[in-house]
Amino acid sequence: MKAATRYLVLLSMLVVGCGDATEGEVDGEGDGGGSESALKCDAVGWCSTWDADGAEVTDAPPLNGGTLSDGLYRRERGSSYPFAMLVKGKSILLIEADWRNDLGTWKVENGRLVMTMTSRCSNTENETSNDPWTWTHAFAVKNGVLYTQDLTWERPTVAWRKVESLCDESASFKCMVSNCACEFTRNTPLLGQKSCS
Image (cartoon, rainbow, N blue to C red; front, side, top):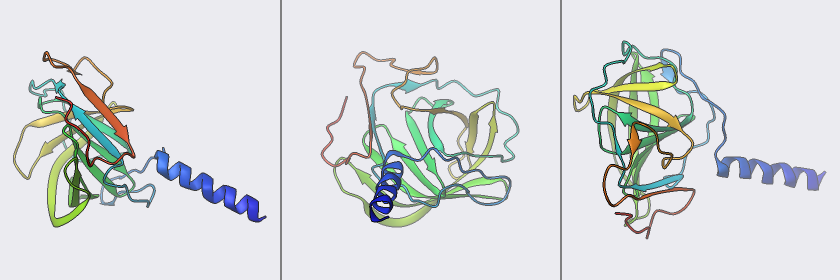
């Protein structure tokens, strides 16, 4: 019995460490669903010189909320700056393409996606707590694409695609410069990572 219990504990640790594929959903109001386990600040690391399609997004549905499932979302259209987010349960990780992440929680409130960020980590510092800041978006999901419009800083609508790796090239996210570089890590410390540019 002890051996079986140890095996189950070890198996559950491996599942959490590798990223559980359980999807959390939100329908309308309240907190995000899915797993209660929090992400670590270095759950994903990214460095890239690639760009997204910066052209205006014209095919977005009405941004009235919807169902946001767990996963890795990469900004593909509406802004050329490479950016991504990882959603798992009530946790969210904002991922910049220069080995810098912000960690926090998310919820849907009045049909809006509200993210509250509480700590940061990067290639120059371990995770540090900071004063919480909130980022609010109008959003919708259509045909597997997440559409958001930043209401905090009033920016245009952008489209996000769910991906397995942030370095998977697509028609709307690829290298458009001469110094093509993209590095993607999971559960690897960001501290000390060298710039890929």
